[in-house]
Image 1: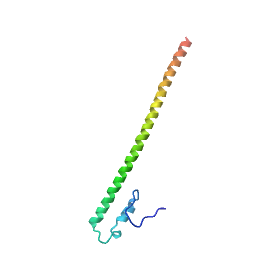
Image 2: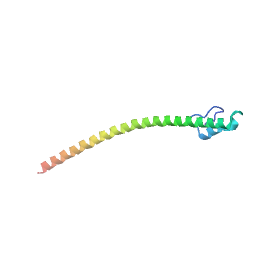
Image 3: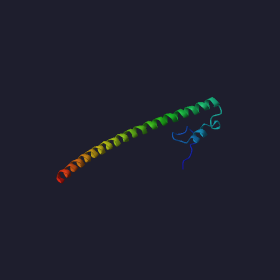
Image 4: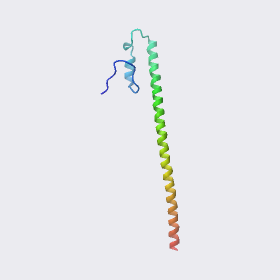
Length: 100
């Protein structure tokens, strides 16, 4: 079970509801203006976007590596299929010759 922190900005990956709770005016200092609250919200949103971009970039790198591995396996299988087709053709020719 997770518990919400008493203070500080939301952690990356924390639920939006937690972020909104953190940014509610009644939790901010009394001197905080609506503009300051909006700026805090925008700063947090920009931070979440940056974190998301980094996360997606890292995942994209992993996918690219996995795709490279799959392509290598594909080429190995394609070579095996070609080799097998050649063997089948050679056997077919041998059977034809022996049958004559």
